[in-house]
Image 1 (cartoon, helix red, strand yellow):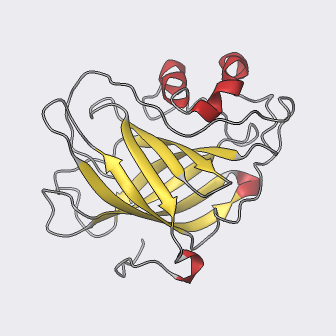
Image 2 (cartoon, rainbow, N blue to C red; image 1 turned 90 degrees about the vertical axis):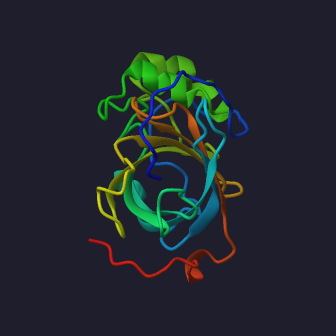
Length: 220
């Protein structure tokens, strides 16, 4: 979701429940999740609070494409109550699925160091069993096939319905943890120029593949 640019000090928060993995060797594709498929919709909030003001925006997300074999997915994100916008702000994002084959826990771009990666991933309790191996090789040796959580990065690519002069930025990206059990999504936004650890919390909706109540937008 687009955010305002501002500088502030770091804060901490936690997200997602933990569950021990059955194996920690080799690497295969993440488990197939019926709630992580094209057309599935999610709804929730993103906390965009700063030191000066507590604030949360309502957010809707819909999966537009998903290719687990290549560790790829994409979708749209709609922020509904952005103070400086006259209309809901919609962005198109692309995601990387951490599977140890296509992508590891180390980002290697978007101004994120391995230290930044560890600092954000460790906010998910479900990541804790992997910490020591990730420090060694980014998670290449991990077997995530039977783990009930899928870790991802979501990077917004462009604004769908507003211009780049809207006063918002999509320079950062999200560290995301998806629960295969209940379809909940927790995430933290990373951008060195924005408030740190902005928390994204989403739940799958009953509308699912039948369609969510988005307005109609044409993706580029």
